[in-house]
Image (cartoon, rainbow, N blue to C red; front, side, top):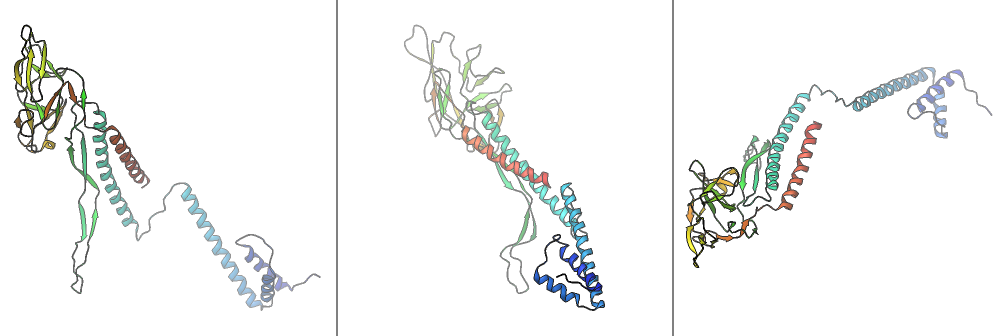
Length: 348
């Protein structure tokens, strides 16, 4: 049997039905909700009008919220950032700038470390090469509150507030550890087993140092460091006679030659080595050469095998002390870190 409602009741029910459907669309009304409708239908005209005003106000509010959400969704899809609020926008931008500068400084140091490792890898087969390692250190700090500040009761704070500003390259350290010895069989190939450097004379008369013992003879028969660019003499100068049939170099650096008609070896020179209190302080020049500095201290000359100096191995060359697998693994690790930092900077 159909139920007939008075006109004012029908209007009220119509509004309530609209109210029930506003969030989730039309749906079946439960018995409880139908009871609520009957209760509202018995209201006076004034009460019904007030109820309808409340419903209309709710509808307007919901509509405005929907418009705001749609506008925000469009902004997010287009990649636009919401404008900073008047109260905190400037502070947020300053913080972002500070963080970006800190990350960029750290990235610069990490890329220097990558460059050093790449150079190590490139010289993995360079005789006598000594690898380098970049040492990073944290940069300066902005101290907002110093540790040990006193409060109103005279008690000392256990910590302070210090804001860092990234990292920087503190040093590039030379690793003078022993590389492996590679047998060549060449009578003018020498390796140093232990401490020390070969002494050579540059074209301007200055003394330089090297661990690369690939020697050869110049047109005068003098021993020089093998190079297509220039012939740097061994220091002291050692001359090999033109009629020498063989060259013998002992572990102690004594150079002797065999000659026709002579069953005995003839000594023609003595190789000396130089050592340093701090060999990591030597200045690298390229072409496997180093120069002494105030940091390395002056050269200490000794015959091989004496006073802590290394010994010589004829027919061998000293290989680079680069462990290729370790260097590649470290380079990949640093690349991953740099990539993550670059992504953070680009997103800002």
